[in-house]
Image (tube, rainbow, N blue to C red; front, side, top):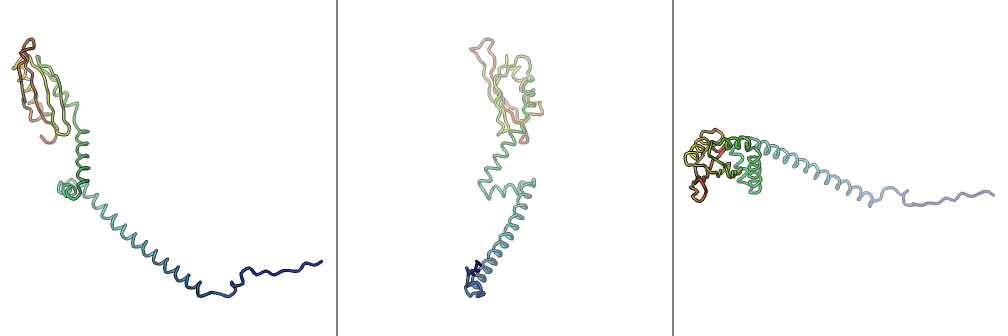
Length: 181
């Protein structure tokens, strides 16, 4: 027995050629592709311009002029807070603690330090101490005033401690350090 070939046609319309509906979809797709391509090119152009502006802004921030920094701070309050925070942190990190402690620890006889209260944000410190007499207190004050690491060294207060044995003089000295001297 010989098998007969069966001819099946699954897509009889495919032989008809291009239909008007197919041509319309092709044209619509091409137009849509052109529109999306044009929009992408425009966005690339805008992105390039914004990158140039950002580079110029970063370069102006790195410049050491204070007028640029003041303009940046004046235009953006959030940026102003961030700049202030960075400056404060920088000041705290660059405080010469070892030098300051060495300056204060050079004590003449008869003087004892009770507290040292530094304020890195203000660039100042308050020293509380006791001296066996007013001469020793003034000697320590003049020693701190002659130290080049400190500035604006002043005697803030002093009081004779009558209730303590030997009647020592308790005193407070304030001083500043750093660039704002």
